[in-house]
Length: 268
Ligand code: HXC
Image (cartoon, rainbow, N blue to C red; front, top):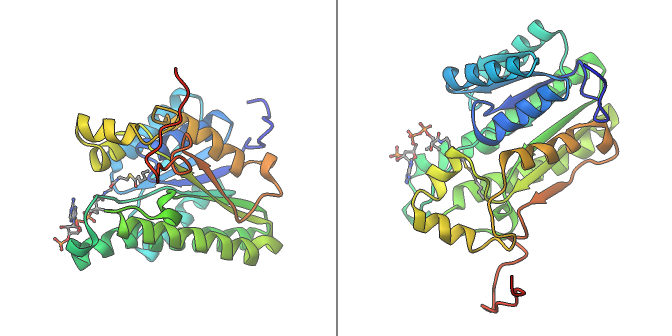
């Protein structure tokens, strides 16, 4: 493959939750840009599908079924990736669990399930990949997928909002700790993105979908490919001096919150 401005040729990335939605889109975009991609997640079938789609694009992938809640499983994932591709250059913390529930009704187990996947899982993966990069003595990039409610909050998302706020804090903290090793850490905060998983968890009915859409000034959902494109920018060499930050890609959704209920949109 010809070199790209992003500098992904011959590099290897782990994408958690790479069997569906945004994770799959990022994996395919990395593959199309010349990278080798290790997809990790709980369902072997969907991971295999992603590897098949990578192969169709002439890219090499490896499926490693992994529950990111287990630090031992995460260490094995990194070992397996290095064993297979010989090197590691970065990570996308995309695996997430989510459902909408009022905090006062949320069971301790429901809280734990989401915090374990999103916050603990992202830390275990980041730690394992950073250790490997230190051992290799090579630079790398780590990207975590969060949500804008990490800072503005949103009813029904206390478990996810708290976990994703934790991932943002982790990113900013480790960006400073790991900068001397040449490891950059950033986040993206996608707005509503048209994927099956988010749709089923967050806008399962036509009414819920219309209600979500009405909050997006751009008037539409993001495509997974739009999120992947921004992700590649943050992972790649064009962002070589960019660390500890979060790029919001939400069609203006959170800035457009209509606190006073005023509609000042121009006529279409
Ligand atoms: C209340 C619920 C619930 C619900 C699960 N629980 N779903 N409580 N309302 N809808 C509770 C269960 O009752 C149980 O508590 C606890 O959560 C754990 O549930 P399990 O099913 O046993 O756990 P597990 O199999 O580990 O599943 C984890 C999960 C699940 C998070 C609950 O939804 C999951 O794995 N989802 C992965 C895919 C996903 O959610 N993708 C959407 C990401 S979209 P008890 O007390 O009964 O034992 C996204 C976008 C956000 O994040 C940004 C948008 C702008």
